[in-house]
Amino acid sequence: MKSNFSKGLLMTALITGSVMWGGTNVFAEELQEYTLDQMVVTATRTETRDVATPATTTIIKSDDIKKAGYKNVFDIIDNQLGMASTGYGDAGQEFGFSSGRSIVRGFDRGTLVMVDGIPMNLKNYNSADTIPAAMVERVEIVRGASGTLYGAEAMGGVINIITKRPAGKEQIKVSGTVGNYYKDYGVALTSEKFMISAGKEYSDKYTHSNDYPYGSNTDWWIGKGQKERVAMTGELTDELRANFFYSHGDITRGGHKYAAKPVDYDYRYKDTRMTMGLAYAGKDNGVNATLGYNYRKADGYDFVKNARVDSNAKLDSYVADIQKKWDFGKDSLILGYTFKRENYEGLVKTSNIAHRTDNSVYVSYDKNFSDKFEAILGLRGESFSDLATSKKIALPQIQTLYKFDEDTSWYINVGKAFQMPAVDSYFTSSNFTNLVPEKGWNYETGIKKLDGNKLYKLAVYHMKFQDKFGWSGSNKLGPDGKQYIVNKGDFRNTGVEFEFTNNVNDNWQYNLGLGYSNPEIYDKSVAKPKWTQDSGRIDVAAGVTYSKDKWTSNLTFKYLGDREDYNKRQIPERIRLTWNTSYDLTENDNITVTMNNLLDKKNYANRYSNLDLPYNWRVMFTHTF
Image (cartoon, rainbow, N blue to C red; front, top):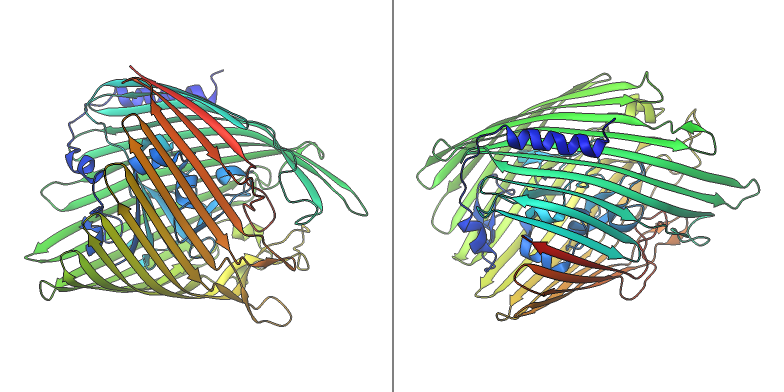
């Protein structure tokens, strides 16, 4: 019987082998590697200069990814200003539906993640685990109002992972990595029309993987794990792109609970994921369209109970989006339609079957009142239907941009946000009929200035949401003895973010981001509700890069401070310092050394005391044929 890895590789080979490939022009993308004057697509669904985009944006290019030595896409996102995360180990480690996810401006489960414009969220959780970092052209992070253009789940913002296009040069790359906790090997093939990669990862055992006994009365460990990956992107024609991403992981986890009645835990988790899609961009007709499919199967086994884990499930979703743009001189109109169908099927509790259908129409009108001032008015009408309820919602948005000159702008972005309960909430909440959607508003204003090799960004924002989802708490358990999803209460956050990037010269480049906010929740599920802190207040993201001849060296720093309390104890600050150095041995050979958590800090990966890895290192060798 063929392994899942072999099946994924075979499927990719069939796809790439059965298509007449067209050409591509990547000159513009290559040019942007050398300038701070970047183009942004995600914020307005049309290509605009970053400095002329009326939203808070962060762009991470492939060159930045390579220099920083990020382990995966989760790691890329987690190191940016305004971003935090929940993981259960290193770089977004997951165990079944103990899911890793990216968090924008302190609002958990409110970030929409896409690949090439195709939404990837399942069960309201975002994960980019299937996307190899080496195949990413850039990541666009839009913080703030995005609901009109992208709908539900974009409560705090949108992340679009844009994959590389074939560069027109045929080559084969082989790589291998060794480290004290991690190793991998892989191969990547590039031709004029397509890119395909395959690889396998191995992670070593990590004892005491949480902060026992301070953060928990259970001493957890993570066993050895492995993951297989296959990925493909290709140009079907000069207007049509295709992508395919597949991964299959296998890892163990266990622990011992020290209590009056001690408990042992011993699990094995198998996780299979797949994302595939088509993206059409008409050159002359103003039409853009995407068609996508997402799949995940989480299958865990409890060796103590000698039974499969109750939460095992299969999830999938079908997504289609089409938009048409009309230009009227300097003004423009975008009209679009989005369809999504999400399905859930329990693997142990087989009667747990659910689905949700989402239809929406959106319109966005960009009016240029003068060469200096423009406004964008948007509206989305969205209709949801599932086994329990039907909902209709209107999501308005207004954006304005005033240009002091071609390289200096002031923007305002205000929009409504909305999110339904997860599709499986029928079975995980004992009071599902009482659940109501999350909803609220994002408000922000900011200034961007490009001054030669320097880029300045300043944003001030306020988030005000009602009926935030959360767990019931250990004192409110469902009939199965477990916590369940409830509407915890209202959420608010007011903050300020400042970013500065300086390309000093051909050798030196540095960036600094500073953020301060006050994320709070009014928890109505407790006896005496009051506003309490819900996430970290202080955020710092910084980096410095030096390049000369065959050498490139980069330091990346991320700090989260003044974090919230959990179980009557403040979560410790998170300090991550990474040093990545790359050297070209020859024209075709490269060696890269990455040292993570240089200060060997005990960093919490989530509020539940699961830890990032201590100091760890990786050495990667790459040869190009």
